[in-house]
Image (cartoon, rainbow, N blue to C red; front, side, top):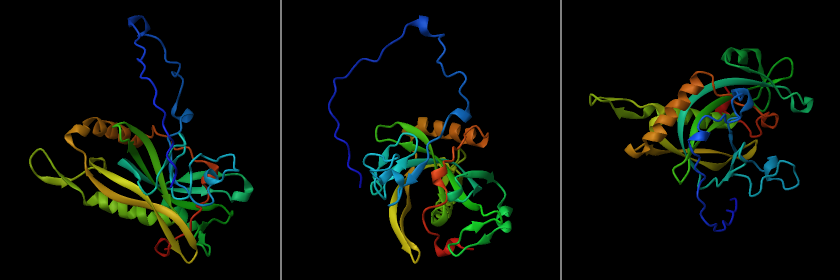
Length: 265
């Protein structure tokens, strides 16, 4: 697993306090839109991921197969220890990619599963259109990452290929959770009512081996977690309003891990 960087002690410094004359200053970010921002993706690194190759331009210090990578900050998380997240929203998409060798990357994101009816399956279980493009069924989980110091940050977790099985199990676990309402009646809990621990696990089948997600229920939010709950609700509303843009990256396509047997319909 990735080596943890040694931290040098630094003298605490006072944070600058601005007086009232600065209250009405612009931030310089007034013209920023969702198209200018990229919500981080959390990825499980594989043996052939460019981030683990020291001779690759995308190499990330400390990255190795089985680690979890934040695509924007390049933070690397130990896959065995994992990360704690609060899921806030979920959606399914059918992403069309051009063949890797064409260099065209993302073609279109479809929302209707019927696009799969236009495809044939190859011997690896991938959906192929007549054009030669791939369709990747992708489950997106929008989450808050909870740091050990109590801070939180937004991210999206795409699951495709062999990880669709994990996505279905995670959704099923969420659907099973309940809470007590103000009338004392037990009702279905929203997905952001609970925390989950995400780790990585080694998987294999006849087509190869890889690292995938492991998902474990970590228990409900506590009364002290009200700021996290409020942030989760705001994030959920932003996703539902289409105010959160996922920046697909060309090197994400196509899925670099094999399909499992139960993912081939």
